[in-house]
Length: 176
Image 1 (cartoon, rainbow, N blue to C red):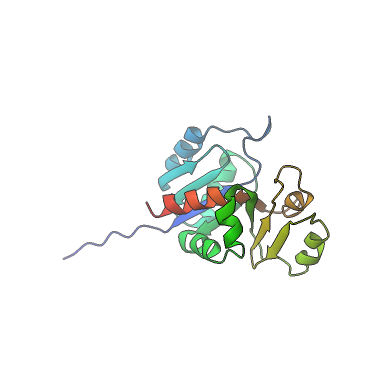
Image 2: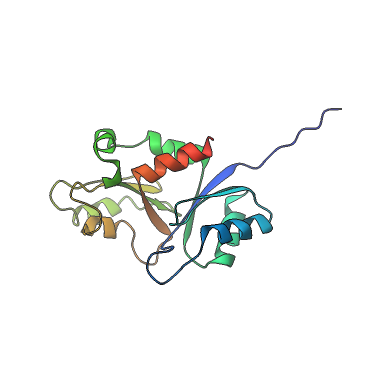
Protein backbone atom coordinates (compact mmCIF):
# COMPACT_ATOMS: atom_id res chain seq x y z
CA UNK A 1 0.00 0.00 0.00
CA UNK A 2 1.45 3.35 -1.08
CA UNK A 3 1.36 6.27 1.30
CA UNK A 4 1.08 9.68 -0.27
CA UNK A 5 2.18 12.72 1.66
CA UNK A 6 0.63 15.88 0.39
CA UNK A 7 1.85 19.26 1.44
CA UNK A 8 -0.19 22.39 1.49
CA UNK A 9 0.51 25.00 -1.17
CA UNK A 10 3.17 27.61 -0.58
CA UNK A 11 1.75 31.01 0.26
CA UNK A 12 3.51 34.34 -0.02
CA UNK A 13 2.36 36.77 2.65
CA UNK A 14 3.31 40.41 2.25
CA UNK A 15 3.16 42.37 5.48
CA UNK A 16 2.56 46.12 5.44
CA UNK A 17 4.76 48.60 7.28
CA UNK A 18 7.13 46.14 8.95
CA UNK A 19 10.50 47.34 10.23
CA UNK A 20 10.02 50.85 8.85
CA UNK A 21 11.00 53.26 11.59
CA UNK A 22 10.32 52.55 15.25
CA UNK A 23 6.88 50.94 14.86
CA UNK A 24 6.08 47.35 13.91
CA UNK A 25 9.58 46.01 14.51
CA UNK A 26 10.16 42.27 14.36
CA UNK A 27 13.22 40.16 13.69
CA UNK A 28 12.67 37.75 10.83
CA UNK A 29 14.18 34.78 12.74
CA UNK A 30 11.66 35.36 15.54
CA UNK A 31 8.82 35.53 13.01
CA UNK A 32 9.96 32.30 11.33
CA UNK A 33 10.24 30.54 14.71
CA UNK A 34 6.78 31.74 15.76
CA UNK A 35 5.19 30.51 12.54
CA UNK A 36 6.99 27.17 12.71
CA UNK A 37 5.81 26.78 16.33
CA UNK A 38 2.26 27.52 15.11
CA UNK A 39 2.54 24.49 12.81
CA UNK A 40 3.50 25.98 9.45
CA UNK A 41 6.00 24.12 7.29
CA UNK A 42 8.88 25.38 5.18
CA UNK A 43 8.72 28.90 6.65
CA UNK A 44 11.07 31.36 4.97
CA UNK A 45 11.43 35.12 4.89
CA UNK A 46 12.97 37.48 2.38
CA UNK A 47 14.58 40.74 3.48
CA UNK A 48 13.55 42.49 6.71
CA UNK A 49 10.43 44.10 5.25
CA UNK A 50 7.87 41.39 5.95
CA UNK A 51 7.93 38.91 3.08
CA UNK A 52 6.95 35.46 4.35
CA UNK A 53 6.75 32.18 2.46
CA UNK A 54 5.21 29.14 4.11
CA UNK A 55 3.10 26.10 3.34
CA UNK A 56 -0.46 26.44 4.57
CA UNK A 57 -3.84 27.99 4.08
CA UNK A 58 -3.62 31.74 3.48
CA UNK A 59 -6.21 32.78 6.07
CA UNK A 60 -4.58 30.67 8.79
CA UNK A 61 -1.13 31.96 7.92
CA UNK A 62 -2.28 35.59 8.03
CA UNK A 63 -4.01 34.97 11.36
CA UNK A 64 -0.83 33.45 12.80
CA UNK A 65 1.29 36.37 11.58
CA UNK A 66 -1.17 38.89 13.00
CA UNK A 67 -1.07 37.07 16.35
CA UNK A 68 2.69 37.69 16.37
CA UNK A 69 2.65 41.23 14.95
CA UNK A 70 -0.60 43.04 14.21
CA UNK A 71 -0.07 44.54 10.77
CA UNK A 72 -2.12 44.36 7.57
CA UNK A 73 -1.18 41.36 5.42
CA UNK A 74 -1.92 40.23 1.88
CA UNK A 75 -1.46 36.63 0.70
CA UNK A 76 -0.90 35.18 -2.76
CA UNK A 77 -0.24 31.60 -3.81
CA UNK A 78 2.73 30.62 -5.95
CA UNK A 79 0.45 30.44 -9.00
CA UNK A 80 -1.04 33.86 -8.25
CA UNK A 81 2.41 35.42 -7.89
CA UNK A 82 3.47 33.83 -11.18
CA UNK A 83 0.35 35.27 -12.85
CA UNK A 84 1.05 38.75 -11.46
CA UNK A 85 4.58 38.63 -12.86
CA UNK A 86 3.40 37.29 -16.23
CA UNK A 87 0.75 40.03 -16.49
CA UNK A 88 3.24 42.88 -16.05
CA UNK A 89 2.06 45.69 -18.35
CA UNK A 90 5.49 47.38 -18.17
CA UNK A 91 8.03 44.74 -19.31
CA UNK A 92 10.47 47.22 -20.85
CA UNK A 93 10.47 49.35 -17.72
CA UNK A 94 10.97 46.26 -15.55
CA UNK A 95 14.00 45.34 -17.63
CA UNK A 96 15.43 48.87 -17.64
CA UNK A 97 15.13 49.63 -13.90
CA UNK A 98 13.20 47.05 -11.86
CA UNK A 99 13.41 48.93 -8.57
CA UNK A 100 11.24 51.70 -10.06
CA UNK A 101 8.40 49.34 -10.99
CA UNK A 102 6.07 48.73 -8.09
CA UNK A 103 3.21 46.29 -7.70
CA UNK A 104 0.67 47.00 -5.00
CA UNK A 105 -1.18 43.95 -3.71
CA UNK A 106 -4.68 44.43 -2.32
CA UNK A 107 -6.45 41.85 -0.16
CA UNK A 108 -9.80 42.69 -1.76
CA UNK A 109 -10.58 43.33 -5.43
CA UNK A 110 -9.66 46.80 -6.61
CA UNK A 111 -12.34 49.17 -7.77
CA UNK A 112 -11.93 50.01 -11.48
CA UNK A 113 -12.57 53.65 -10.53
CA UNK A 114 -9.20 53.59 -8.76
CA UNK A 115 -7.61 54.37 -12.11
CA UNK A 116 -9.26 57.80 -12.20
CA UNK A 117 -8.13 58.61 -8.65
CA UNK A 118 -4.59 57.37 -9.28
CA UNK A 119 -4.25 59.05 -12.67
CA UNK A 120 -4.82 62.39 -10.94
CA UNK A 121 -1.75 61.68 -8.76
CA UNK A 122 0.60 60.90 -11.65
CA UNK A 123 3.48 63.25 -12.39
CA UNK A 124 5.53 63.42 -15.54
CA UNK A 125 6.17 60.02 -17.08
CA UNK A 126 4.65 57.99 -14.25
CA UNK A 127 2.27 55.27 -15.39
CA UNK A 128 -0.33 53.14 -13.63
CA UNK A 129 -2.46 50.11 -14.52
CA UNK A 130 -5.20 48.80 -12.22
CA UNK A 131 -5.70 45.04 -12.24
CA UNK A 132 -8.13 42.83 -10.37
CA UNK A 133 -6.26 42.78 -7.02
CA UNK A 134 -2.99 44.43 -8.04
CA UNK A 135 -1.95 47.87 -9.20
CA UNK A 136 1.18 48.19 -11.33
CA UNK A 137 2.91 51.56 -11.19
CA UNK A 138 6.04 52.90 -12.87
CA UNK A 139 7.98 55.67 -11.12
CA UNK A 140 10.85 56.77 -13.40
CA UNK A 141 11.98 59.50 -10.98
CA UNK A 142 11.85 57.33 -7.87
CA UNK A 143 9.27 55.93 -5.51
CA UNK A 144 10.18 57.78 -2.31
CA UNK A 145 8.75 61.19 -3.28
CA UNK A 146 6.09 60.00 -5.70
CA UNK A 147 2.52 61.01 -4.84
CA UNK A 148 1.34 58.15 -7.04
CA UNK A 149 3.39 55.63 -5.04
CA UNK A 150 1.77 56.87 -1.84
CA UNK A 151 -1.72 56.88 -3.37
CA UNK A 152 -1.67 53.24 -4.53
CA UNK A 153 -1.49 52.10 -0.89
CA UNK A 154 -4.26 54.08 0.82
CA UNK A 155 -4.28 54.21 4.59
CA UNK A 156 -6.77 51.88 6.17
CA UNK A 157 -6.64 49.27 3.40
CA UNK A 158 -5.15 45.81 3.47
CA UNK A 159 -2.69 46.59 0.71
CA UNK A 160 1.08 46.69 0.41
CA UNK A 161 3.57 47.35 -2.37
CA UNK A 162 6.76 45.63 -3.51
CA UNK A 163 9.23 46.57 -6.21
CA UNK A 164 9.91 44.32 -9.17
CA UNK A 165 13.26 43.07 -7.83
CA UNK A 166 11.56 41.82 -4.67
CA UNK A 167 8.81 40.07 -6.64
CA UNK A 168 11.33 38.26 -8.82
CA UNK A 169 13.27 37.18 -5.73
CA UNK A 170 10.06 35.91 -4.09
CA UNK A 171 9.15 34.03 -7.27
CA UNK A 172 12.58 32.39 -7.28
CA UNK A 173 12.20 31.39 -3.62
CA UNK A 174 8.77 29.86 -4.23
CA UNK A 175 10.16 27.65 -6.97
CA UNK A 176 13.38 26.70 -5.15
